[in-house]
Image (cartoon, rainbow, N blue to C red; front, side, top):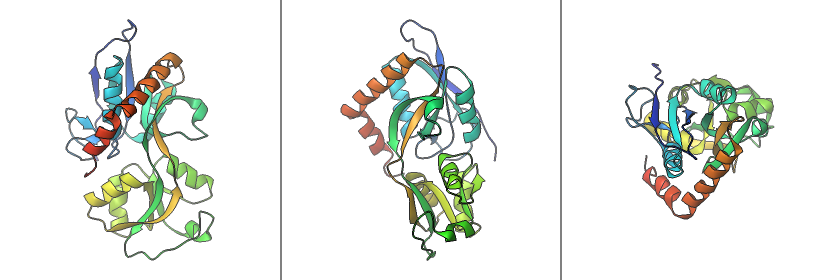
Length: 246
């Protein structure tokens, strides 16, 4: 798969400071994706999605200069972790990550599921069921779901591209796909996969913008306060409605 990295910078000023914050992301529909809805494209192909739109409007409303950078998830995460004035989104706020970042959000709710083919009659009691250790289960490389399952002793095949994971499930290369529910629905439609939710991994999960620890706490506070106003005035609701039928 061809990979493109690009930065789209929208210039504003914040409290008189000319600083640009780089916000790293991946192709992760319906939260962040290209307008042509493919996993690759040219650098001028606009970035869109639920999280992209929320963050874009948020930064414009508080007049902060920002840019988006698109790459594989692992690279995006590491940039935000290591580099000043950078963030990564949308990402899950886990115990392991809590002290590594400053957090803006939540942006969206994102429950975790095992997705299987509709003809799959697999059943298991919970994540401690021994059968899960015998299955070919795939999830996003270096993602929170894969990390969580591995911490439970469940073997996971890691893949950078969810499109490929959906194809593998369709073609019976893997048994289960561990993914956020809205993403699983989106990619299943793209590959014409007749899928169903086999089981719940975790409910009440949320996605955030995670900032490098050297980013000002005042900036994080201002963004969170404005995000609250966006929820109350209906801006976030309208963004969700825009992507409802994808």
